[in-house]
Image 1 (tube, protein in one colour):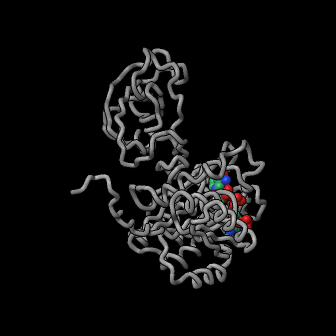
Image 2 (spheres, helix red, strand yellow; image 1 turned 180 degrees about the vertical axis):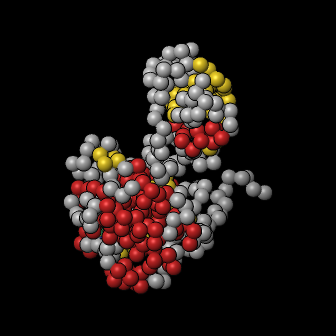
Image 3 (spheres, protein in one colour; image 1 turned 60 degrees about the vertical axis):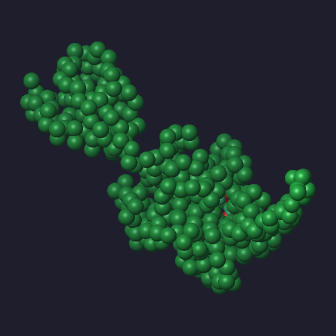
Length: 398
Ligand SMILES: NC(=O)c1ccc[n+]([C@@H]2O[C@H](COP(=O)([O-])OP(=O)(O)OC[C@H]3O[C@@H](n4cnc5c(N)ncnc54)[C@H](OP(=O)(O)O)[C@@H]3O)[C@@H](O)[C@H]2O)c1
């Protein structure tokens, strides 16, 4: 009989299968913090890439000093050079990787040229994926492209108010379509060059490069549907790249949240772009951390109060209420498109100037048209009580 207190043989734990992850630009900044965390906290076997062997060795030593049981090895690779990437892939051809993190990047305070920025940030991830995707686990492998909030700033045409990019918005448009092709991405780079009379300013090139790499992520998702490819923004992080570029950013250790989510977290789709809070974000506008996750399928109910505008200019006293209508529309729909559809409902054709108020309006619409209708205003961004307006139909002014 047993007393229940004697030691029983313990079951032997199976050796954990270490995820093998390649991280480019692993010797400094966000890349170094990421490698350290993947080794120490996620039990990954990290292949830390550095273009400079000495810097790379120092980084690997630092990680292994902190985590002597960890697995971290150096790969000397310059993502800006075909032969360097090809040689690294050849040397590692017997490895099956779980993940590739295209983190190496150039721009802003690095003070490098646009050609370097585009070569490292756009061609770099392409070179690395061309060489390393055949070495990825073809069933559950992941690719993470480190992008930036500068991607949507470039698409919008400004970053913190400063103009970003010279190409027209219709020329940039392929970069936000899931149907985008690699040729179209190169086409946008060319359009930007043309718009700048043969040159691209480094600030513009940085935004362009990040918008291009989010677009490239979507091409990867289509080409390799069994591999999950994501792009993400790390947030504003204090590194050599951002030194002197504005307010102090968060520490590199805090700048890895979205990258780790894309690499190890549960993801809802392929080719998505994530904000620094690891929530899905749109490509054509900014979503700040803490704001609701981007969901292109989400619909919102919009209550429209339609007024006939008398007098023409604000404050619109004495406007006549014409109708109230409810529409269910995609949250993501452009306000102009929505108004066109609402107009197509046919009820307003005899009204001249129309003001549309979302939600409950006051007795008259003093501050009507507080929002201008342009391409960028989304219906889902309007708040209750906010008004926007346009001349829906000029015939039949009564
Ligand atoms: N910091 C931010 O706020 C922020 C915001 C948005 C996005 N990002 C992105 O985050 C990534 C990491 O940047 P970071 O802020 O950590 O900057 P960082 O500290 O300056 O690190 C950049 C890393 O990229 C490497 N690199 C540059 N050119 C390379 C090349 N040709 N081949 C291989 N490696 C190369 C650098 O190596 P060397 O040490 O040899 O130069 C370094 O390891 C970049 O893609 C950046 O665009 C950063």
